[in-house]
Image (cartoon, rainbow, N blue to C red; front, top):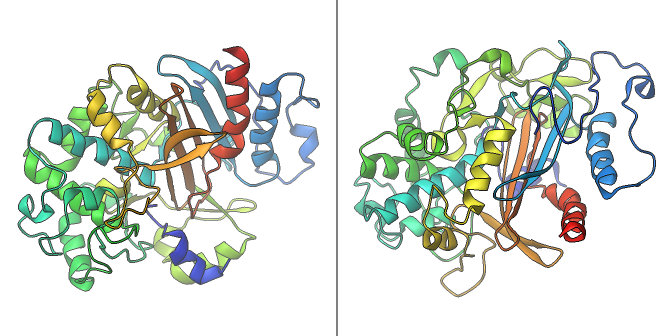
Length: 413
């Protein structure tokens, strides 16, 4: 995870424990959360019985909003060519009553790591990188010796520390002048030692992807952001207004929220600089100020749900515009530790199984947002879900939705 998000193990120690504006496959009337009046009076008329399998999916998603778990949700299920099901419901901005829709801009947070992985594999294809060469070979000032490889960085097995990134944000008005290299130079100096020997075990690290971003810049001769814009975003024909490292139209920016009456909110109050990172409350929600992640390569992308769908579809396409078939297969192959133990991690992607079908996935969570993207390579299927509420861990929320969606897919094939 990125932004305000730490790993699940880090946070556990603290509290222990697509649619466009006018048409979609499912169109539901959105309601405002500005008042706490009787919910049923303003709800859309959702199906009360599962006449069609899609109804159960829509009701499950709508309940997230109706039960006050998120101000809005968008979901899209797709093949490499087509949109098979999409759903948008709730508020992008609670105070103004602005509905969430396909033009709404969300913070992708750690889903950016999958773009970083694609960029690395592209450079491998060009012969500019080798996955099993020491990272220090490509980045002379690499701070963790000569044993960690590029592959170790991509699979979170380099042993690099992962300090809590709760303050690794900067205000929107300073974004154009913010120097992330200077910022992370200090972070690396404060965390100079590996936590484990490279290859020995899986241990999530945002800093590992900061270093990958620097390697991409060093090898390509372009900044990390420029490389991703030119070789991924532009190659897919996605306008920068829909996917970039900065918001181009603030009127499309979704506001991020965190439930006020929650134990996690108490913890955030103790750990965050509220004056700098939080906005005024809106009804049952606390808001987050407009701020950017300090490290582009581990969590800096901002975009729409349809843009993320388009990216994932490109990774399903028989002839992907982003990677060769061999590189794509390599990216989706599960990594093992040096003693042969599966890690659940591929090159920049997690892996898992649902209803006996393998998928690769990544979550992006932080202050005010939680997103998942998932691809089922053997089924030519994928899913994206976006919320404008805080997510702290890899929830695998898509398991709940896709378990029903895959049943639909089998029925119509």
